[in-house]
Each structure stands twice: as C-alpha cells, then as structure tokens.
Amino acid sequence: MKFILELILTTVVIFFVWNILKRLFFTAVFKFPKANNTEEKRQEKSKKKLKSKITWDAETVDYEEVEEKKPK
Image (cartoon, rainbow, N blue to C red; front, side, top):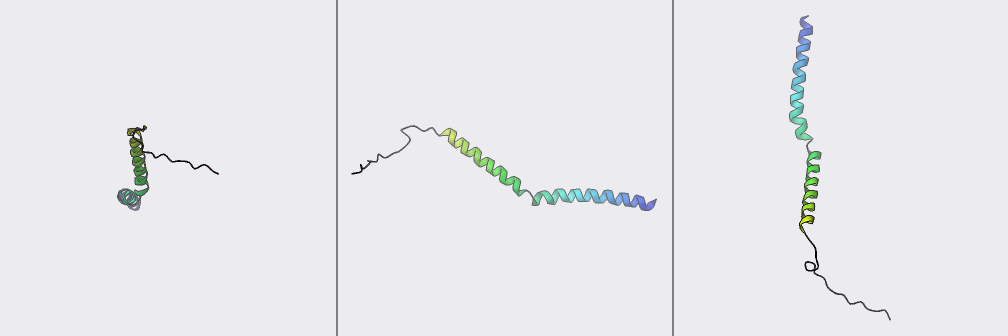
C-alpha cells in the first residue's frame, strides 16, 4: 500500500514539475515562427496604410516626354 501511494505521489509531482519546466523553456525556445508571422502582418499593414494615404494625380507624378524616332 505504501509503495502505491509513493508511486502516485511521485507521478503527480513529476507531472507538475514537467509542466512548469515545459512552460518556461519550451515557449522561450520555440517562439520564433510566431514572431515572424506578426512581423509580416505588421509590414503588410504599414504598406496598406501607406497606399491608402497616397493619392496620385497628374501634379504629383513627374514625367518626361520622350520623342519617338520614326523608322526610315
């Protein structure tokens, strides 16, 4: 009987210690893929903001007229 209680108690303690260690180290080591996704989303949002703020018309675009040479 004592052996079974010790086994159950050690199993419970190991389970909780494992979960705490996994929560501390596993998330710290494997955070990188999630961070890349958020950076890409931020860049897309900033590009969308820039595109929405810029309005193009003939006065804002500089252009140069090019003369076409006619073939002989």
